[in-house]
Length: 398
Image (cartoon, rainbow, N blue to C red; front, side, top):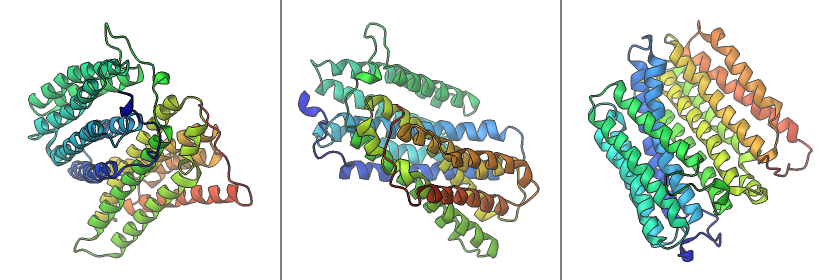
């Protein structure tokens, strides 16, 4: 079924269905943020909040990332205009929507809905493509994926059926660990072997475009959170300053990402000799940046709602840790695109870490403004380095 493959002709850009698919994730990420804020705002000084609430948030976030990421790779390997591929995308779109609705109660009464939607998306995808690719070597990869997701699906359903508590999170985290490890090892299955990543053929430019789109999705969620939170009935100077700092941070995220590594990511893909391995590595970078942006979004809402409140360590951790995680992912991406990391990235990380004990006696608003100023410093450093110099070409480090 060679006609199913993405040959890269007129498919470097995302299709309208893929963009429609992306819209669901603005909603889903917003639900993750809302759920996390509710957890953080409930007795924020209690012990274990970092391991418990952040751990649950991470499990939900990685599950959504798994849905989006596998879909992006599918439409970059197979023609997104083909009916079978479109069916896969639509099923995953609907599943992601159900997951988004169930997120608020994923660790309580809606766990089964979340798990069933996730398993359905992950099982239907390889099943449909295995049928379409029958008789070809590529069918074996889909069969391996089908077996893996069917096996981990048992853990997802079992986790949803156990009483709400730490057991559900452990089973779901274990299932995610198996899935992520299997993907990196080529989906190994006894009797079927494995498929090394370097053998995977795909449209690298299309995948790079999907990563760029995904980054904008994440930024869209931060704008939504800041706007909805500030749009309440209460208006004060503190809330207004926090809202302005949140918007400035979102703009700085955009500026730092797209200048210049994010902007020329497709060029870097076209120059690398191992596009599939390069794509896998940049996926990890974007996953780290996503975690940072979602954490920052949580910090937005907490700070806009309580600009002059106390500063529990978990609150300050997301306000400063979110930008720090973003910068770690952005530094990885810079190394992947240019083969080096600028000093400004390292300085930002050091400053954000150093600010944590300093800002503990202050107020949430001070932490948010400080994080914004640190990111502004990184953006200014980028401008100074590029001033008067020709645009730096991509030199993939992979």
